[in-house]
Length: 92
Length: 186
Image (cartoon, rainbow over all chains, first blue to last red; front, side, top):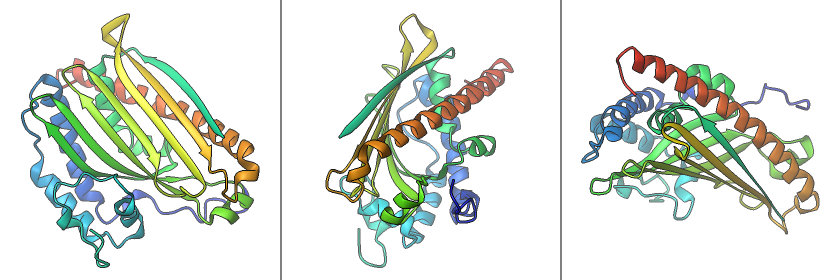
């Protein structure tokens, strides 16, 4: 719509630095969700190593203004370990 | 002024399959073309309550939300950041998602709630999806004088996106159904 067109649209999520870790985590989550959680096996979450790698990547890229916005929002987060998400400016 | 509307849709698929489809809605490449306004989705947190079988998840959504040029001049950007909080209760078979914007809050507040429950007429075979959306332009913001018009445009846009979302969900449900009849899962 308008003269801006698609030229200024942000790039797709395929270029997100954590895309591969995210995909690995989501694939694992989807399998766990259907094969275990929905069938009554909800004693623990799996995909721990995929989750850890994904989170580590996100924490390295917090300075990306998109992600730091989510941290700044009040009462939104329920981090298991807030210290992992300290950004360079000290926001935790 | 708050504009609110609700929608209801029945998926002729069991609740387990529909909720599994909901998790896949934004990640399949084919679906990304249909839901092209969703730019990024990241999972921020998850928590499982082993006693109750409840899964709590928070996700960050970055959405491309272009408006007419005069709105863009006031707001200064095309992107909206939202947080989606989800609770899936596997014991009682209910899933609730609440999505609200965390950017552009000076101008607008949007909240969308979606629930997936077994359909009362066919609890093992069908799922009812109820969606409630409310849109409100902040009264003292620079958009206030155009509030009614902008809210109406948002409603139209969201309803258009909901139709696309349902198409994607139906497509994923059919895919999961085919997989399960091939003896794999869900």
